[in-house]
Length: 101
Image 1 (cartoon, one colour):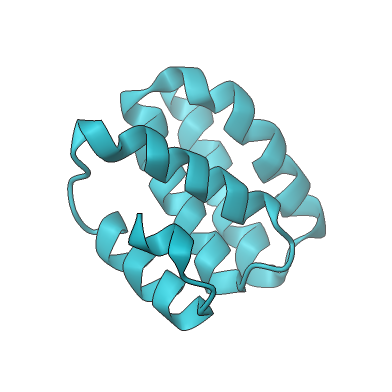
Image 2 (tube, rainbow, N blue to C red):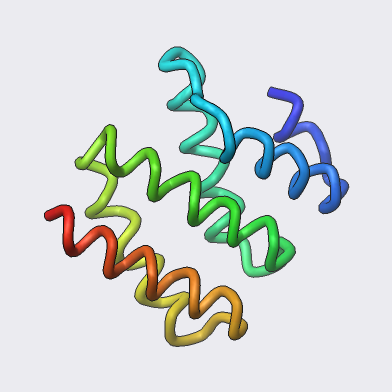
């Protein structure tokens, strides 16, 4: 996938934004989920990249509820240790995930 090949954070942010605003074909879902988890777990990833990963994973959690168990602990950690923007996004998504459970 072109996103995983890029180390340029502005390109990653742009690609993730485009992907986040469009329907992801089912055959590409697994690759994108894995990549988003990888970028989200990497504290060296840019804040905007991590924020888009949170959003994309929230959307995936609506389709694939089984990933909530993996996503929630990551978001809880981010809501305690992340930047202000990451904390805010993580808390909003945690509330959304809790409502849907």
